[in-house]
Image 1: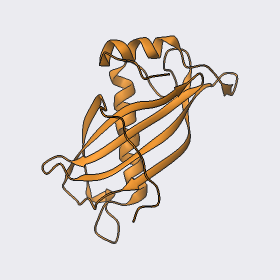
Image 2 (image 1 turned 180 degrees about the vertical axis):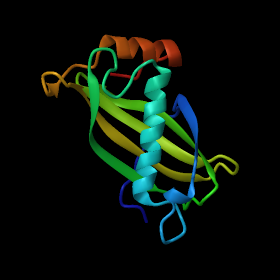
Image 3 (image 1 turned 90 degrees about the vertical axis):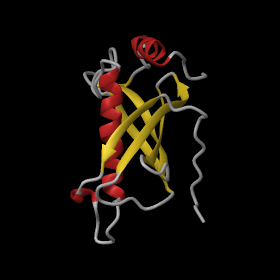
Length: 149
């Protein structure tokens, strides 16, 4: 029985495919939990790039990850392709939750779901900063909707 339960929004608008390579596999012959977070980090970078941003600049501020929660649903294995779907939940002045779900692309089997607490950050001042309006504008332009505040 899972101890952490992560509810996902009905729709996660960004989807990218990730390949599980041998370097992602642990001694149990399945996807290693630390490598899973690396795959999610790759998907996050792709999402930001699609919006024309990077982790250090989302329109005037960067992002830092304050926390992470993950719920494992099934094993994943070398050679499988995973779809990583992402969206935003619980937006606030200084950040949001980046929620995600990994599914095996051929079968649709859910592998994991989770969320990262994202805080927007002014790297020059070394302090949190409001989420730039440019980020929300590009999100709405690309995905047609804004998260509910």
